[in-house]
Every structure is written in structure tokens, then in C-alpha cells.
Length: 294
Image 1 (cartoon, rainbow, N blue to C red):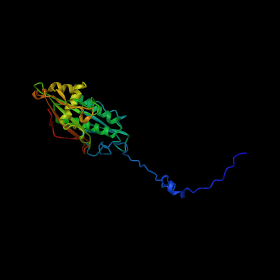
Image 2 (image 1 turned 135 degrees about the vertical axis):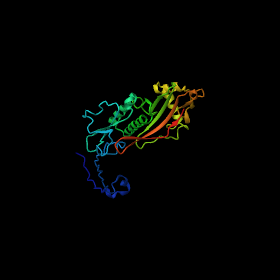
Image 3 (image 1 turned 180 degrees about the vertical axis):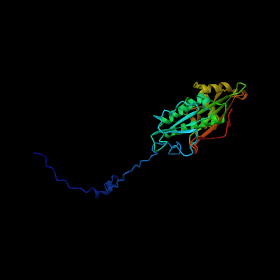
Image 4 (image 1 turned 60 degrees about the vertical axis):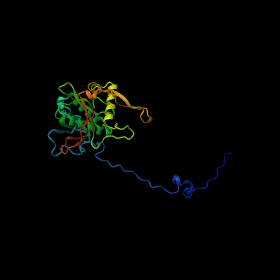
């Protein structure tokens, strides 16, 4: 014979409060439906120009708006005095990708600077992270600042060469006596500032002298031409300044007592440049105080 099934007593789980409260049986839960609202600004970088409709009224004569950079034959047409800045949803009523061009005085005479600007353009077009867009905008603004305000300086280190953290840009100007003036530039995008960490040795935060010297040591050690050039011209000699700092594996380098930089005519200065957008559509900049390191 088959098994006889007993009739089960119906249980009211809402009455079993003390044991099942945490599981939600004691009372029914209110279900909240999350509503996502579509915005025309979705995907638009916060560091893009604040205008959302182009071309804007009163736009500068050196700025052009390109509504479709994919199909427009004038996009990156090879003008050597022009930089090209693409953005997603630059115009929130237009295509996904639009762009703007800006004439920069002096760009036509600096091949390395033009390569730098081209790298910025590629980054802006392909970057998904907003931080990368901000960095690229800062790199463009800093280079514009040097070209417009420091005649005779040529870029020897820029976004087209370096990758990762470190010195953003190095510019060099030749003097009549065979020496050089070097300019180390830190580029900051709209709203960004210098990075400070209390866990670094004194004098080794971003754009402080120790930070610059430590990066020049590593550039020279890794065979980067710009770093090797500076080390040779100033006769820099390095020594470990903070070995295994704070018990860690990383050591920080400074200048050895035998370093010849004090007897060399070449110099190194530093400058922090922050980007902002002008009301006429141009990418502008604010330059800090010029600091002499060596």
C-alpha cells in the first residue's frame, strides 16, 4: 500500500513575529520602483565647455564648431596652427560626437606641441572616464599657455610621449651661450588641483622640488630623452634621500653633494596651469607663480 499523507495544518506566517521579523514575514514590505529619468547631458563630460547649444552667440573668431566630426571633411584638416577638441554631446541637441577647433598662436612652429595636441584629441574622442577627459583638457590648456606666453620655448615632453603619473610637460628654450632654460609644467583640468599626501617625505609633494628631482632621476634611469637632456645639461648627480621611506619598499631620490647644477648656466623652473572655459568658447587657462628649482 502507498503511504498515507497526513492533512497539514494551515499556518499563518504573519502570526509568527518573533522568529521571522528579520526576514520580512511579519508584515508586507512596501516596494519602491526606481525611476530613471533620461537627461540630454548623459555621457557629457563635466569638464566640457559649459555651453550646451552650439554655435554660441558671440563665439570667438578663432573657434569653430563642427556638428558631425565623423563625416565633416574639415575635421582635423591639417591646419598646423589649430587644435581639435572633440566631445560627446558637446551640443546636447546634436549628434553624439561633436567637436570644436581653436587657433593657437605658435602651434605651427612646434612639431612636438602639435603631436601633443593630436594625442589630446584622440584621448578626448576615445576616453570613457570623466577623469581622463579632465586631464586631457588640462594638457591642452597648459600647452596653449606656454605657446602664448613663453616665446622661444619648445616642447620636449608631452602627452604624446609620457603615460601614467609624473611630469606632465617639459619645455626648453636655448640660450646664446649653449645653455638651456627648462620649464616643468603641471597641467590641471577644470576644477582640479595639486595632489597633496601626508604620507610622502617633506618636499616631495606634487611640483615641490623633491618631487621634480625624483621624477627627473627616474626619467634618466628609464632612458627618457627629455630627462637625460636635463641631467646632462645641468650635471645632475643623484643620491638616495629617503631609503625605504616609512618602512616601505619605495625610496626617494634627491641631489648628491657632487651635483654640478650650481655651476651650470642652465636652469629649471616650474609652473602649474589650470584650465577653464572662456565665455567666447575658447579654452582658457590660469597660470600660477613661476618657481625656480635649480
